[in-house]
Length: 385
Ligand SMILES: Cc1ncc(COP(=O)(O)O)c(C=O)c1O
Image (cartoon, rainbow, N blue to C red; front, side, top):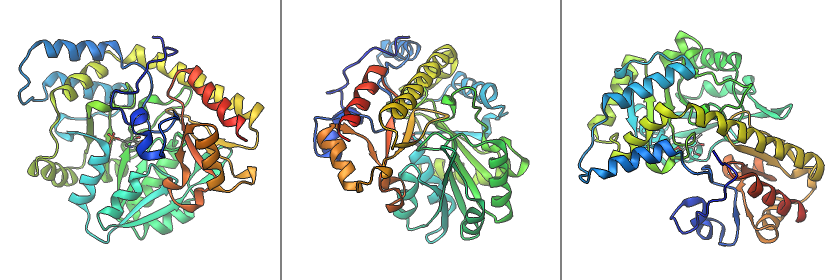
């Protein structure tokens, strides 16, 4: 795999490169923001999609048994989840899946707990559904995010569901077993159910190890709905293919009943074909991707130490998103933002969208790109401070 290859994406109607004007007010930016990678999607996925296109009837698809076997096998091999077919449901996307859980399983005014900073839709979905957003701020301890359990427990008492990014976005912190068990105990004691969004889990960078929330205890298994997807892992987010795992029968009946009752959870032809190919043939490709991403994380770490020591980073233990805190530079947020956009011409995600004014001075950078692109972005950033 040649992850160094620079593939022009502008003009392919992709959000990362083609929506810069809409989101940043300029087209002339190096896009280091939205979470997809600038790498070629794997050849075994492309080949499966091409093969399917040779049959020129694109009527309604079903999810074949071979698709479900590939999903079940992946869950077992990677996470020691023993999922039965009935405990799984196709979901077109995880943001949609979270919205469906909130609609199906909660009422207006119910407290929805999240740990901030966090992936922005975790904040907007509850608010858009008139649920009460309950935020428990994370602390940065030794360069990684950590839960403040006193605060978390107090807020859990005001909540009905927790939406957990496991691993965490932004910053890629991998939650260890002790942390997840503690979250499970607190949630169980306070009648809080858990959505564990594990979209970034496959890309956990060795030696870190992803622990799926549902596997830490019987209580965790019983109170949770887990989302996984091949979309980030294999750079196929445009296929809209995710899976939900719900071992608790009561939760399942209610949630899967809602999905089926409202016709919300079918995939298109390519969603099933692409995901099956990815899960069936993806091991070697994934190992090579992880090695490359580790190199990019190292490149960022070294660059910051040598050239931008005032920038404090949470570097990813999983996936390719890093959290950069520029506040020690003594500039205000708007000044940093304007230098990044107007002088460096680099598009990063604004930290305040991950949880408000507490994150002024912070920005998220996407490392899922050829190393030369990353270095170009870092040089440009360094030159404007
Ligand atoms: C934690 C997390 N959940 C969900 C998503 C998006 O998932 P989907 O594209 O399946 O809606 C992202 C994308 O960045 C993410 O980081």
